[in-house]
Amino acid sequence: MPSTLPDGEPAPADGSLPVSALEGVGERPFGLYVHVPFCAVRCGYCDFNTYTAEELGPASVPGASRATYAAAAVAEVRLIRGVLGERDVRVDTVFLGGGTPTLLPPEDLVSVLASAREELGLAPDVEVTTEANPDSVTPEGLARLREGGFTRVSFGMQSQVRHVLAVLDRTHDPERVPRAVEWAREAGLQVSLDLIYGTPGESVADWETSLRAALDCAPDHVSAYSLIVEDGTALARRVRRGELPMPEEDDLADKYELADQHLRAAGLEWYEVSNWSTGEATRCRHNLLYWTGADWWGVGPGAHSHVGGVRWWNVKHPAAYAERLAAGVSPALAREVLSPEDRRVERVLLELRLRDGLPLDVLDEAGRAAVPDQVAAGLVVAAGDRLVLTDRGRLLADGVVRDLLA
Image (cartoon, rainbow, N blue to C red; front, side, top):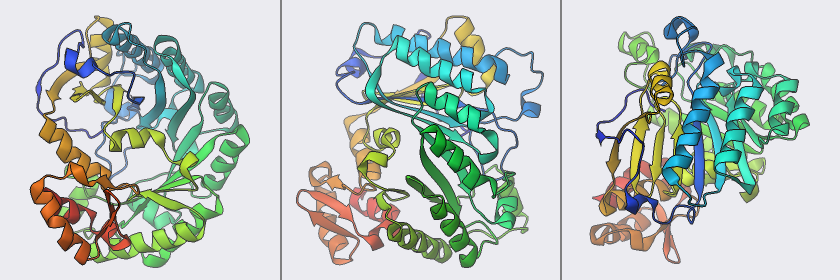
């Protein structure tokens, strides 16, 4: 959840949605995202809507403490039922992100999931994920999450190399990662590991060390993202002062190719440009909802939602968020109604990144005219009625998208 919210038209105080957005709700996949905005330490590269205890001020402020957050999130889940009315909606995926959700007691996370079960209903094969830092979990806590209905945990490993973690302001001990993974396995949870490459000062050998350490844990899923220096972050200020260099495109490309090589050799296949899994059953189904334009409701401060072509976002601060819900008012700050062309463009942006590719009929006339040049350049292949990125095309995916939308 980026910390800067976009502009938009004011959202209704009761959270209501246009009739057109509600048509077909329940027929499309439906996901629930829960944003938990608390962190023990703010990482220098992060621009998400998160807060440390010091930034939030007195713990007595309603909604601005870990102790009161779960109740506010449950109140928004109840609001969802009110907005959707009697429509039969089963939640297919639940994802708790942040921030660090596992800074909250396991019982709080389970209570939010239980409210979704009671108010909306969960699909029999529901996927329930929480993000976690390796140092924010215990064997007992992970076992309680599994008992409460969680099915996956995504650990923010980022790197196995201490000097790289230091640049990122990550505070966990890298030796903690395999232990946390083992505890998750013992609890019966699927395991995903998040990695970041391109950190200033990270050598190719450092990146290979991180890849090997991650694969030694035998994860079901790996996400590997290139470092982005976001404006307004501590990392951006250090780069601007000349203390650290900007990541170089060639270095990022080399490290992406190295990741793909190691992950494939270990039996993980890419299904989205930055994501690999051991098979279809271990793909992150929640993220697939985003990439395929399905419906999801974002609970929490600054959380974004999308239902039936309407996108909206909540107020940012936890106290303001809780205050609105306590007053019986929707926490939604603003929204936008996407036009058919908006939705088509987003399909090109997102679906082309998937292994299954983009249906050719999503492209307009100019986009279809650009396809032969992309094929000739070895960036895409036409697989039946779909356009699929090649290995080289994955490195240049943003450029391919620009040409297809030109």
